[in-house]
Image (cartoon, rainbow, N blue to C red; front, side, top):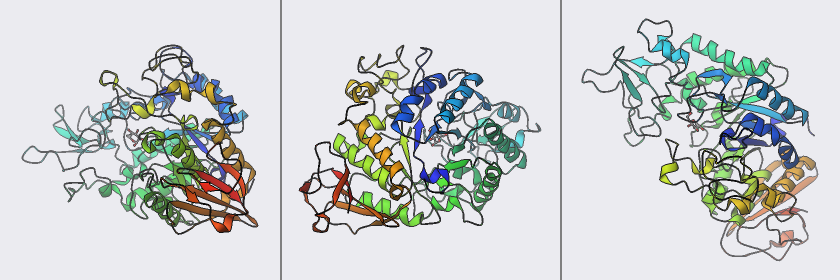
Length: 512
Ligand code: GLC
């Protein structure tokens, strides 16, 4: 391995704990369930696990509404279960990242319960309270995510409104108050002292909104993402970074920065002299369709924004988006996408189940639970073929959501050890990344687009690999200059040698 920081070399695997594995038969996945699958994960070859929130929560936003930043929700298990999990992760040479939700707490968090109790409560200013306007309308024109309602809820008890950029049950913390900053720093220290290796920071760019909250000028852009992208957020992140840098085990923070214009997400890693996040998600590739113009352009834009000394990420799927297997509409495309995700420059973030080629679940109306329509991608992992769309598949009881479509075909036990499976492709690609430093830390040069062909090269010292991806719908002639290249890995299990033509949605990794 190189001497790059561990998170540059790593592949991170996101687990949505409610849907991963259920050890106690209550229909919801839990920490002991994850511990039971650590051998599967180590064998797959991922380096770090990121768990979506496991903290005490009324689950209005399924854990992204935290009622105790240092407590584990009983549905996920106990402190002892957590200790067993982190020990098991570390024993296998992996790392553990937790999901830290700094922008808002639950309305059941004791801080908010106090804050709303009276105008002169010492925690009043821990959240963002304001008077309604003279005509009774909310303090500004911001809209909340999810429900297209005002981002303010009026509280009759004290006759003021509080800000919530998400659900009314998720009041925004006031980071302009140094006591909030100190308390939230303590939550980071708490988990670092318990051995976690870092955090994924939820909607972290929103914490810098400050206290003057102007109306948004654009009526079509009601959610105040842009109004919250302010210097204060960067200041806060620099202080978070220095906290993290005070730990010897090099904890990493990756931020969910949902800003999609050039340079925006990248600005949240700061500069070498004033570092902020270690990594900042760039969702432009995820938002591109399977398209010969769009996808390479998004990857090229990310490459530009995250040029050295910055470092990009690569995300195809997560718990908020339709899975890429469903978005792209075919197994062949999902396979080729896996090649892209694991060979472009940057730290890949895999979403549990993508190594099985999982599709979203079709969730009938009476089973819908998420306030923002994201249940499909959160369907439980089918571990075994035996079962239907409601139950079985290695889950002891009917889980909280139905299974993905074609769960039996995609089940882990149908794929592990089968050389043609999606699982085998991921496992091979992960092994290849470990073997060949060029795939982890090599430079990346993207060739100009040429018909349906997306082509790029990775180079490190005298090692080079070239990746070809056919993003079009027709076969493509093999490039002349690669006539003598050797096949390293191909996305199509039928391919055994280089050459011939490149099928639609086929990807190959070639050595000169
Ligand atoms: C992030 C999370 C999403 C959550 C929201 C509010 O976007 O990924 O799941 O609902 O923040 O916390």
